[in-house]
Image (tube, rainbow, N blue to C red; front, top):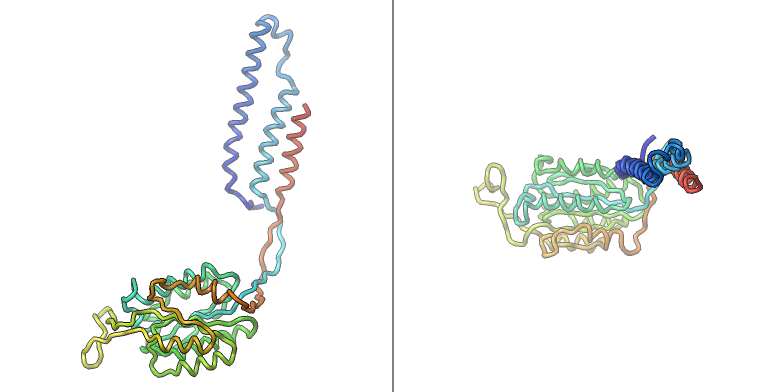
Length: 325
């Protein structure tokens, strides 16, 4: 047995109060009768407690107990049922290059992106989501899944140390995201949410975007960072080139706009006044409009059988029986 609403258990604390009120009422009634007929006549007129009164009080207590017990929603027995959900297939491609440590957004580009992704996961409505991590190379960090807790666990370990190969290969990230989507099937709507500062290093992002378009995949590009160059803080100090000069990183919006528009997606600037609102993007663009939703099998779910009807029936019977006495 289990209970569907155990939060109502506190109502049982009212039971001692009900019992106390009934006892107090009985004592006061007995005292009033004694005062009316006198001590000498009381034993002749009243023999013990009235069985009807006792029965009525017991039934009232039983009614209260059964009704409160029914509010706890006792559940006994269960059966297994198939779980299906309808949603889109979505891969988040997250830039883990060292330039994502730049602090032109707070606390830095990478942490801001990860927080926005967590907010996005909280509003998903049965969609499958996957994660591709990329820098100088790309790999599928989490395949498409309905297990959002597992996805968040993979997201939590993402940092700039995860990929030892430096650089930012956006084209490779798009191609790896396409691979992740095709491994999950070709039905329904498929989208890529690309989060990066846009500083590509010769990986042909537009060619990869053409490939996505051919497969009916939309890319929503999120540019994170400022247009003005800022240094990249490392544990050893600011990042420098071979000549010892400080390297500056800046957002390349033009490339990201072209990538998004080529596939029918949109580009958003995470550094604008609106900030990085992936929840709004999801509601307005990804799940809005005429998106084709795919039906996903989510495995088996244990469905407990509600049994609150029986204590509720007993409570009503006790209440009616007490009222008839």
